[in-house]
Amino acid sequence: MSDAPSPRPAPPSRTSPSGPARARELGLPCGPFPVGPHNAITDVAGVRVGHTTLWEPPRVHSGVTAVVPDGVGPENPLPAGLFAGNGYGKLIGATQIAELGAIETPVLLTSTLSAFRVADALVGWVLEQPGREQVRSLNPVVGECNDGLLSDIRSRPVREEHVRAALDGAAGGPVAEGCVGAGTGTTALGFKAGVGTSSRVVPVGGQDAVVGILVQANFGGTLRVLGREVTPADVGVPARPPEPDTGSCMVVTATDAPLDARQLARVARRSVYALGRVGASFSHGSGDYGLAFGTRTPHGPVPDTALDPLFRAVLDAVEEAVLNALLAARTTLGVRGDVLHPLPGQALREHLGGFRTKAE
Image (cartoon, rainbow, N blue to C red; front, side, top):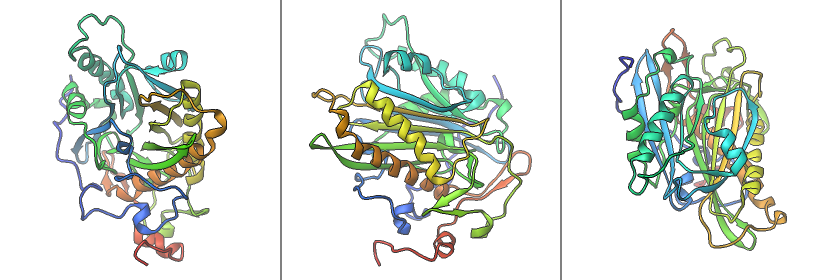
């Protein structure tokens, strides 16, 4: 086992009133549908999020994020769909999701070389829960992004206790964004990035449903906002030479809409397509994955013809979640001297010629 640091207090995050503004608070248009009370994946009833952040500058910027649907387990799988926009990644558990259309554990996100330790810790945590004494097979679901630009990835700093802390600490309500959990060391589109989240309330089959998004943003390309390219230089941020084949992105979607596994796979596709809106390059080395799961509902699946509003809501919410990740991040000095800066909200407004805020 490495001599990795214990969890340090997370850097300032969006849950603090003094934190940076989210995309919506800056006045960026975010589509026609209303958001849930926290504009987060936790607006889907029964979905909780936990982070463990490893912050030991400049050597380690890493962590783990847990998306925990209430009651999920091998005895109570939830319908799920998967889409690999580009499969250059390590999504543990992917083949069973594709085969059976279900998840039976929480969904965990972390750093590439820590994914396997995280999966082992997740298995141990699930097996220890009451009523699972006879479980003999389990499919842990763990996604990853490579945080090796800013963190000592070879040290594999995420340990079992960090995984358990994220799982046991998962909660509803506001979700910390930016340099927290699995997003602590990630970068995207030339900026420091991290975890971002958003939600929408949308009519599906004659009833309102909630769809929530959480992204672990770590992909290449040139940022696009309101259809315009925005480089670091455009907003006064020092740029660094781009990494070849920069990637990846994990997009987790939760919904209480009554969908089956096939329909959830269609939703997962849209969550990856949405990355193109913000300028993703979908390069050779980018692992771009969408995973969508549904919470229990008493109704059968809606007709496919009812899905269009949900598809639009997913596109809008992913776009907003990525912007939130960029805006919430903090300037980070990496293990080899690289410095990445977040997207500055006020400079972005000025570059785009201003846009209306809710108060205006």
